[in-house]
Image 1 (cartoon, helix red, strand yellow):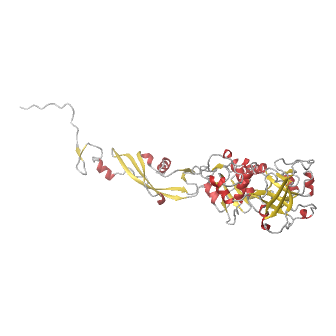
Image 2 (cartoon, rainbow, N blue to C red):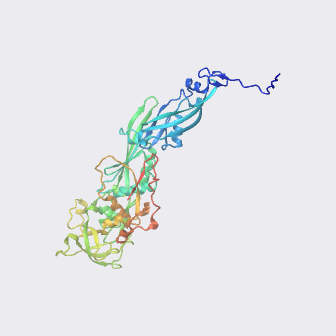
Image 3 (tube, rainbow, N blue to C red):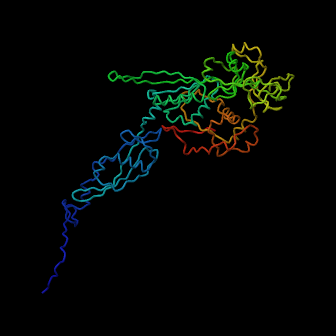
Length: 503
C-alpha cells in the first residue's frame, strides 16, 4: 500500500487560453497577454500624427496657446514639446520616449513612445511611433517685423540728414550700440538719407528721441495718425511718428557763417571748418585758430550750409611749411591748443611738373604737415559756390586746407587691427549704397582720438601686421581695443535681430 505525502502548499491552478490554448494563469479575460494585445490597443486615443508650428525667421516653435520657445533638433525641450502635443497620454503610463533620426530638411520629426496600460485585468506595454510634420508659421514678433501691411508698429522714429555721405549715420549707429538703445526696437530699416526705427510703444520711441537730442545736434517733429477708435468705450488707437532732422554740417566740411553767428562767436571769420560733431557743432577759423561751438537751437534759428563737403575737396602737394609759433598775438576769444598755425605753399597734384606758381595759404595743420605731404583742401579761387552769404564775404582765402591724407589706402585697410559691431538692418530699396563712406569713417576713427572715445572697437583675430608696419598713417593702439567680437555667440536685440560685424 502506497501513501501520498500531504502537500504543504496548494498547487497553482492553470487554465488554457481560449484563443491559442496556451497554459496561463487564470484572469478575467481567460486569454494570454499575446492574444489580449491582438484584441486591445492601449494606445487607442493617442494620435500617431501631429503638427509642429515653426517660425523660420527666429527659429522658434509654438507652444500652445501663444508661447514661442527656442528649441534645437533632438533636444530635451523639443521632446517635451512633442509629448505635450499628444492628447490622451495622461491616461496611460509613459515609460520611454526617444527621437528617431530624420533628415533635417525633411520637415518631419519622429518620436518612439513606449507606454503601459491596463486592459482586461492585465498590464500591457506597447511602443509606437508618432510622426510630426513641421509647418512654417510666422510668430507674432516676426509678423510685425516682416509684414508688408505696416500696421503692426505703434511708434516710428525717422532719422534723416541732408548730406552726400553717411559718416554721421555710422557714428550714430555706434553710439546706439554702445548705449544699448536698440533693444526695444521691433525692426530697423535703412532708408535713403537715414534710418527708421520701429517700436511697439510710444515711450520706447520717445526714449530714442531723447537720446539723440543728447548726443547729436538735431531737432524733431511729431505727428500722429488715427488707426481705429471705439465709440462705446471712447478708446482711440494712434500711430506716432517722430521725425528727427540732424544738422547737415559734418566733420571736415568748410562752412560759411552768417554775420550774426560770426559776431556771436567773437567775430570769427565767416569761412570756417567744422572740426568735430558732438552734441554741439565745433567750428574753427583755419587762419587764426579761433574756435567756437553752436548747439542745435542756435543752428536752426540761424541756419547755414556747407560750401564744400569732403567729396568736393581737391588734392594738393605741400611744397614748403613755415610754422608761426608766437608770431601773432592772440586777441579775445577761445583758441585751439591742439593745432599749430603755419604758412604753407602748395601746388595742385595735377599741376606738378608744370610752370604753375605755388599757392600760399595759412592753415591750422602746421603740426602735421611737412614738405612732400599730400593734403586735401578747398580751392576757393576756382570754385563755383552757390551761396548768397559767401558771395558777400569780402576777404576770402585762396585755399582752405582741411586735412592731411595718407597714401596706400589698400594697405591701410588690410592692416587695420580693429572692427566695429553693426546692426543688421533691412534696406527697403536697392539704391542705398555705401560709396566708400564706411572706410572713410574708419579712417576718421584712426585719426581722431576724441571721435573714437565714444565708439566700442573690437580687436581683430587676424590682421596683416606687415601691412600695418608699412603704412605711416595713424593707427589705434591695442590698449584701446576690446576683446575680439565673437560672432559664434553674436548678441541679439530684444526681438532676435542679430548684430553683425563690420570690418
